Length: 120
Image (cartoon, rainbow, N blue to C red; front, top):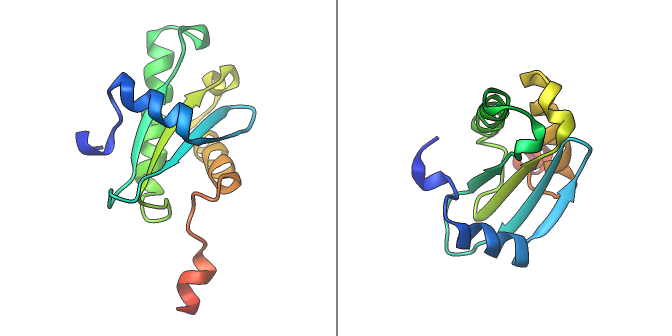
């Protein structure tokens, strides 16, 4: 995932936390902030040391990035997403991470519905 699609600075994370909406399930919390002046989406990842050692944390981040890469065409643009992993995410395989992220993104109405696209 290219650098322009990532949230790196603390100020940007804080803006999403304070101005965005949050949606959660057992494994992830996703903060979503609408940004009209941006033609693409960006993601920021937060995986606490409480979740596990460095190897585990990096694996979870890699799984989340890959899930967003695969869902690229379905995720709504003009938004910033901050994904916070919770403890149960440490024991999940990639497919479980992806389906859990799909679930929480659907709750936040962050995925484009395929039926609308077909009817246009």
